[in-house]
Structure formats: C-alpha cells, structure tokens
Length: 288
Length: 278
Image 1 (cartoon, each protein chain N blue to C red):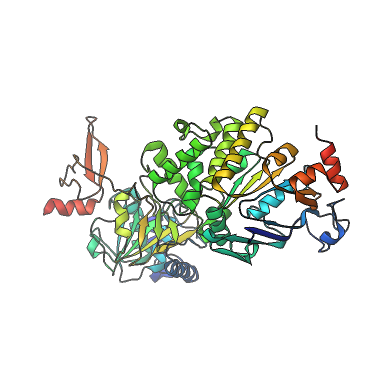
Image 2 (image 1 turned 90 degrees about the vertical axis):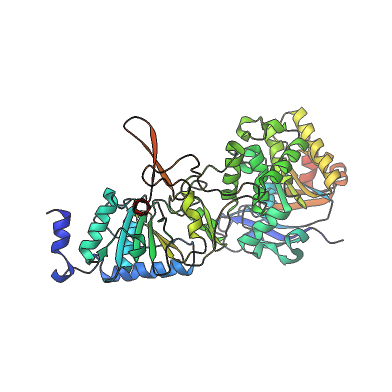
C-alpha cells in the first residue's frame, strides 16, 4: 500500500487516532511545549517519536503540529517560503489525511502554519501559530562540541565563547558572516538558534503578536518564542546586525526589490534571476 | 591593611577520600595510607597583600600548580576557604569565594584575576587570533565594542612586545616565547587586581626568560598589581618576589621573606633545595 492509501484507511472513523500520534505522546509533547513557552529560548528535551517521514525531514515540526492541531484549524505548510515544494506538499497531505482539517496557501487564512527556514512575509496575528522545523537547535554547537558543556553554558549564561566567535568573524572578515540561523538573545537570557531562517526574518520575531514554536525531531528539542518577547540579534556597538539588501535586484514576477526576501535562481540561459521566496505573497502582489 | 587574598586550609584531594586523608598525610608523603587518595594540596593558608609579590617554590608534584588552579577556580577545592577582597568584583573579603555559584566565580575571574600557565596551550585558544585571545575576558566582562577591544588588545600586545601587525594571527603560528607573552597580554586585559603566574619561564631559553622576567617586573612596578609567582626556579623567585612559601607534598613547609629563605633556610627540605641550586 502507498503511504497515502494507508493513512486514509486508518482515518479517525476507522479507529485510528486523530492526528496520527497517540494521546499520551501528544500530552508529553504539549507539556514540553508549555515548558518551552514558560522559558523563552530554552531548549526543552522531549521524546521524539518515529514518524512516517525520516528524521531530519521536519519530524520535529510535524510532531508539534500534530500535537496542537484541532479539527477546526486551517493549515498551511511552506518549505523555504514555497507552498508547492515536494516536502511542503507531502507534509500538508499527510496532516490533512490524518486530521481532515482544511488546508490553504493563504497566510492570513491559516490558523496554524508549519514552515521550513522562512517566516511568511505577511505579518501574522495573535490568532495564529507558526511551527518551525529545526535541523540543529544548539546555537553554541560550533564553538563547543560537547552537549554537557553547552547545557552548562546555557545554565550559567556563560556566552563568552559565542561572543568571541563573532569577534573573530569581524577580525577575519570585517563583518559577521552568519547568513541563515543568526544567533539571538531571547528575553535577555538564552541564546537561541532561530533555525536557518534568513536574517531578513529575524526582526519579525521581536515583540511579535504570534507564538513561534521550534521543533527539532532528530535532536529531540522543543523551544519557543512566546508573543511580546524581546528577541535581539547578537551585535556589537560598532558592528550592527543587518538584514539582506536586495538593491538592484527585483522579483521577475512581482517586481519586489527590498519589500520581500528574494531567492536567486539561474535560468536556462545561465543568467541570474530573482524571485520572491514567499510564493503565496508574490502571487498576491502580482494580482494587485 | 586588608589582604587581597586570604586563603585558609585550602585542600584538594584526588581520589575517593576516606575523610581522614589530611590527618594521615604530611610533608613527607601525600598519599593517604588508609585509602590511597592523593593530597595534591592540604592545609595551605596564606595572605596576599596589595602590591605584593608572593613566591611559591617547590619540586615538581609539590602542589604549586594545584594551588594556583584552586585560586583561579579552574579546579574545585575539596576543603578550606578563600576570601577575595576585590571591589571590582563586588567582593569585600567577608565571603568564602569557593562557596559562590559558578556564575559569580566567573565574574570574579573575568573582572579581577589574571593567570599565565606554564603551557600556553592551557591559557590560549590556539586557533583564535591573538587579538581575540586578549579580547576574550573583555567579552566575558560585557564589552561590546569591537573597536575599543581591538585598541586595548593592540596596546597590550605592544606592551608585551608582540608586533601589532600579527594581532590577527592565531598564536599557533608564534614561537613559545611569543605565545607566553600573548598569555601575559591576555592576563592583563581586564586590569586584574591579582595575577597568577604558573612556571612562566619554564621551557624558554635564557635570553627570552630574562625578557619575560623584565616584563613581569616592569608590569608590577607600573600597575601595582598583587602577584603569586609559582616556580621551581630559585632564580625566578629571587628576582621577582618579596615573600616566599616553600611547598612539599602538598604542604607548606616554610614561609618568610624571600631573602631570608634563600640565605638562611630553616627546614631541611628548603636547605636541600637551596644547596641543590646550580
């Protein structure tokens, strides 16, 4: 049997649990989510379940989504801003099949959005939740390989090494060269990895209306940024955090320059083009 | 005058201690006959006054380096207490620093202590630039201005005779003597009130040794910082320190003015040490 047929056959009406995961597991994941919300930026360990997709393909985000989704939710799934990519479509189909919820590509219509590596361009509201898939949750991993040590560093707010790595970046390259996954200080306490979202999306996390949940299935961690939380990118007084600049580049569909985040693509003729990374937003701009 | 550092009965036992290790050992053996634990340091008490240079001398394995590492919170003491009188760290000499939280210990370390290890690999990050190494303590202490940190690093590297043009090179590219001087620059970055030197000149050739000693003496005169100088080399002790403690098997066997100890040693072990000098 194909995955799709199997999931359909095992729908709620036929004895399969709503949203695939059993209720006990959902409760455990929800408790971890509550703890994560209570301690903004702190990575809460959780018992990551086997999912019908491979670890590292969004299982963390998927488990959060399945644990908090209800029959009245409207779901949107995006992968690097795109509603139509294979991974986004597969995850969306799967969730739809095990819950029967309505799906949409419209950001403002969705109540629950699962995303990989982007935050939608359209501002989100307090009635929505954004679930981010996280490959590597530990922001200190590249300065300290030992998990026991990074946990101690978080516990004692011992972040000197992290700052040193930023200083080194400036000493060697003249600026902080981190592109995606820029380290952030959440609620003036924990340094957090926002998953590999571009710097462009970082300001959207600060004092937001929306609840952001982060799930790392392979690394078994859940963390959160609750609404109205201070989220500051690590920066120096004389080397400020900057978002990407698209001066001189524009989307070939909607013409956006510095209004949206642009992806670079190489055409058949070998030339470079730019398109909006957020496809649904781009479509709307085209029809305006 | 209030001492900057007051240590009382400082002890570090390695192994599963039977609880009586300190009573059962003395300066003739540091291995507990009951449980076999090693008393690396036991019953060490001393005062270090402002602007004073205190020497610690003894053969290898006598507990000198352990003592310094306990004072710098690198290792946890198994007994005793240390009182720091360091206004910059908010310490008034009334509280036992060994009982503080790791966070507060780090604050004391980053605001008021400096250390130079025998092996530059212990004190420096070999893959981080020399400037970054010096800036590390400043970053821990909350400095967030790259320009200011680079100015300060450049100043200190110049002071320790490292060409500023090599500031953005990692110390693994440097010679042993240069690495040692980068360590000294790093130890000075936070304008410490107490500097700890652990066998700084060991392994350096004589002319480099002399320059490092000159540098330390110059810094002491200029900055009026209290220092603890650990060495097995009586020449280093003689040229740098005013007061000296002699250690053996983790215990202090004799202490007093450096001149007095070197000219008129009282304890048989010190006599042996002084007469063994080449």
